Amino acid sequence: MAFRPFGFAFELRTPLDLAESKRRIRQCKQPWYDPSDGPRGFIVGRFICLWSSVVQSQGPMLIGRIRDDGMGCRIAGRSGSDINGMLYLALTGVLLAVVAAGLYRDGQMGPSAAMMLALCAVALILLLWSASRERRAGLVLVDFVELTLGSDARHEFR
Image 1 (spheres, rainbow, N blue to C red):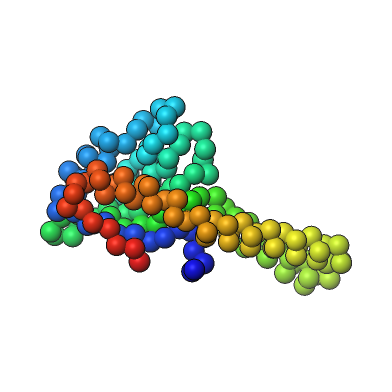
Image 2: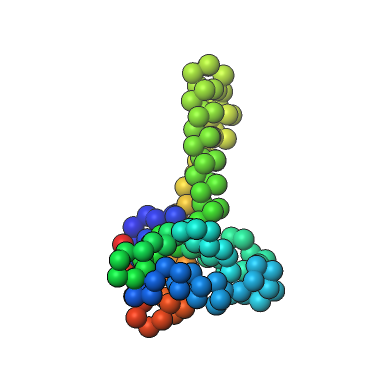
């Protein structure tokens, strides 16, 4: 199994034009604050972002770009279990590495600081691995977009 904590790549192609594709997705998704679970989100220009629950922000998420390809519309992006949370964790890991390098360079890293950084790094790796295992949770949102755009739409996993 490949390590993909930021979800899987997808690509949807449909014979519908760009405006009709956006209209159908906007029409079929739920409002942001609807208490029931289901796809909700926004489309801004050529950017699409969908998630599943109003209560749980760590749920499945889809992020993509909509573009006209001359013979219809193409939506490509990533979908996974918690893309925004994994992005924040990755940024935290980079910041942690920068702080650790600065402490080491200044000679201020004692054994306790090294142990804390090592434990944080192990926890970060375990959380990213867990997200990689759960990346198929975003398939529901890809299927929603595929069904919304009609039976002619088809997706390809990359």
